[in-house]
Length: 248
Image (cartoon, rainbow, N blue to C red):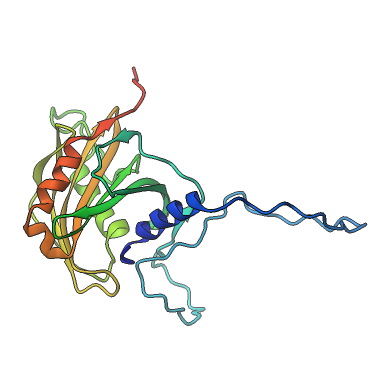
């Protein structure tokens, strides 16, 4: 499994933990006669996430700064996306909750991760959903009643999918298809990253029951996208079926 993305390691970790053996029998321990003073333990303790940054411990800096710190973690819970898709043989699935710093505000975004072999390499599909929108719609315009998922897709591409140090290129806004429904997005490519391989793909976003979804599809190596891998990934996206409760 390539090490280039935080979610790849999560997916492998989920599979390994699912196949592990049973826990050892608990052993009795002597309790102290005097109860220690209670300590405050936060109810939310995110586990460390292998970030997309090089694993170098920075020197301590006591100088205050107004620059937002990019906090990255995966909370210890699985939140499968409310959808299904037909995956080819050999593909693996993972899910979780992403905690990140979005312009100074701590955000939580659930995600689903899918990866497996495609012609010429390895294919990846990441879906982010139920995330905060960067823009709001205009209720006075017939085509502006919803937030712009193209803008959200670009923002989350840089914040969550790729390394910020990468050279990222994007195309003009385009129309795609997710589960036979129109979706807005564009193509992207990345090169010269500190850790990850060069890659190319596209993203597409749409609303289902007023819940935003953005799908990212890409390959490694980058040359795989020049062959049949692109259509193979699109076939998977064509099979998406959402499973959200009906709302009034």
